[in-house]
Length: 353
Image 1 (cartoon, helix red, strand yellow):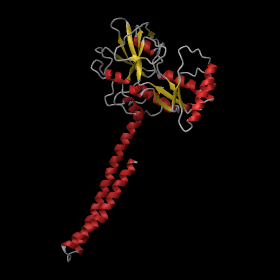
Image 2: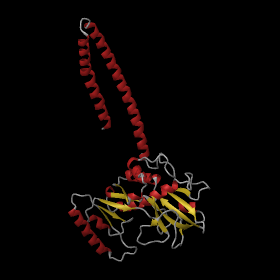
Image 3: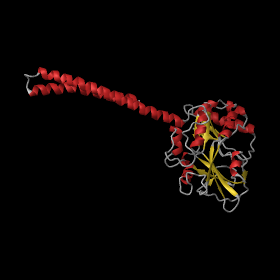
Image 4: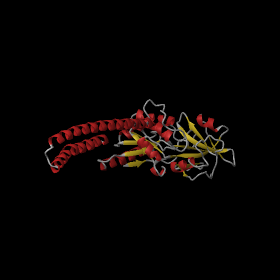
């Protein structure tokens, strides 16, 4: 069971009252669901009295680490900011209970900039004062209580269709494309930007893709966190591209936009992509060795059977054809078929398991 906690933009409730009521609620749920896994979803920083988490019985804490760029000058879910957030939570609760929450998509905003690439890389994004804005591409209001008017949310399902379309070619740095592609090195997050034709403002969308997810998965593994949580899996593509990448470490052959994640990340651990590549290579080599072994066994059985048949013909000069055929087939059924059946299926089951 997951319990999501949300506070208003400017909370008026005394924190001590919130502390007492929330602790009672969580502990009551934990008692009633003693045989279930209980996870609470919280905000980016432990702003509540920190002892609240020492007095509640939960299995996991899900940190909603996204939408950082709302009313700020940074990317929406960069790994650099996430490291700060998780380190802060690590002082309150054991890291083995922390779950990193991600969004399958990104936040689009309107910004004003003289050099948008430089501003994004140096985290000097200037938010445009734009009200009642209409954003390009299909969108939905950003899921935020404060209802900032110059933001909207784009799902990965929408983004990957745009990235794969003719209006947004794979080479997004091409001057012929209205949308330009960029990748923030420090934040390890992809983005698209487009100048608004009616003004000097830009539309910018920071989003989760294979590269950014790969960096987050590496961080989770290297720091022994509990895992990753998806806020809404319906935001994924129809063929579950991002979910499949998280589970298997593989991405579609023609992944829309960005670079392939087959190269190793800055982390010292092996990325999911390289783990999967090693498994494929190992499987091919193992299959090749298995075929060679089976061929050798088959050849030896053939030679053995041929010798037995020659000996049999020598001893059956005075026998009738029916006697020879009866002896031949009985020997074949007894020696070859059971042995072949047991060997092939046991080896197959062994490899599969």
